[in-house]
Image (cartoon, rainbow, N blue to C red; front, side, top):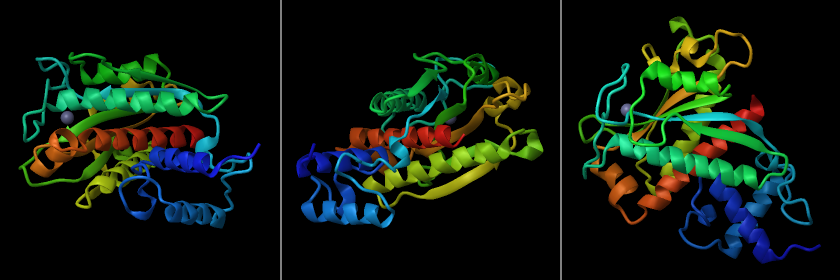
Length: 284
Ligand SMILES: [Zn+2]
């Protein structure tokens, strides 16, 4: 059955959206996918041996392959009291939005995108669990233990940064091997996927996006291997912690909370992270 050009464009848009690009942003323009951009995208795919059409839509593309696994998302902070090393809140946006509210919102968006993507892929089964689903706090080791109890393949702790109102950028943290991480290489691979995805997504909305990279951290209680269950030797959980942006920076607050594209940008970040998580499950 022939696929219409219109449907091909729709698929291309969905494909780009899943990569963290704003819909139709192939040629750097906002708005609908143009014919020229679509042709350029198709020839780009062909240069990589990929084809979109004739019943083989993105057939060779990794993002169309079935994926299975368990993901635990950990929205940072919560509640009103410090608990087991976890503060109720840390950063506050320039307009007053609390980090703990933004982390929960982002976790739910990521879950939605993972479910949407896997729902479109026959044979896929990815379970997504949140360490908290409301405004409550959990201790750091309790958060990690959710990953152990659910036999998680991936554990992603979600945070937003705050500093001096000027600093900005995106970073992802992992525990170093020197601090007892039994699977640092796997954690780093996951962290790099998620980091690149976030930066690409933010850059679609704001050229001032800054890639602060993947960093080793000495004291990340939430990534502690013993709490994650990584001492059993079987199927260790890959884990990292994202600091998506500095929300006390007014430009970032506009990007994520108060600006006209705030919802779209948060969704693009969530979609990009979801894609990165699925890629890591496929690789793992
Ligand atoms: Zn935080």
